[in-house]
Image 1 (tube, rainbow, N blue to C red):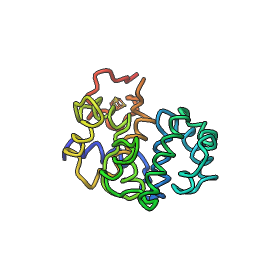
Image 2 (image 1 turned 90 degrees about the vertical axis):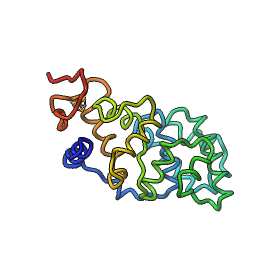
Image 3 (image 1 turned 90 degrees about the horizontal axis):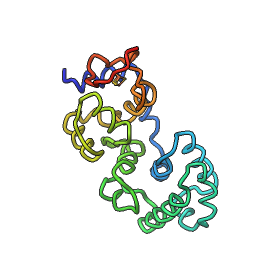
Image 4 (image 1 turned 60 degrees about the horizontal axis):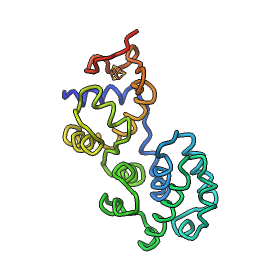
Length: 207
Ligand code: SF4
């Protein structure tokens, strides 16, 4: 079995994933992913709960007062920039009947939307095979020797080349959870890592 498949197969047994349960409202996935930039999960959850308790969709947010949006999403940090972006995106969507595009090009055409956010919408809202590359999904495959890339874009295309397509959709969640719990950025828990024997990292902390 390929090394990448062996790693995925071990992580599948160790880490519970629930991407298929997410199948969420595409607009909420889009805005929540935007809010998640440069903040912790709990701040994202708090900000998005506050925002969506008052504004339910793109039409309402397109007409919303900017100060109200800023106040509601303040827990997510960088709230002024994020609030402006939310309004711009909402206005762009309203011109598109309020619908979030279901294809990568349509999503990338929205103001300020990059590949990670677009791919998150494809996976978590539409269940389309894609590999969103966040900090964990770029860092870990490089650290363990699956890829040798300089930026998330290169990592995405390398992973799409070596990971079988039927594994794309779970890849992000598997590696995010693995990165949060075991293969942490600093002091990874190599001594309890289920893929230690397959990992090429030179500075393992084995106690
Ligand atoms: S052995 Fe350490 S560095 Fe390698 S994957 Fe496991 S936790 Fe990460």
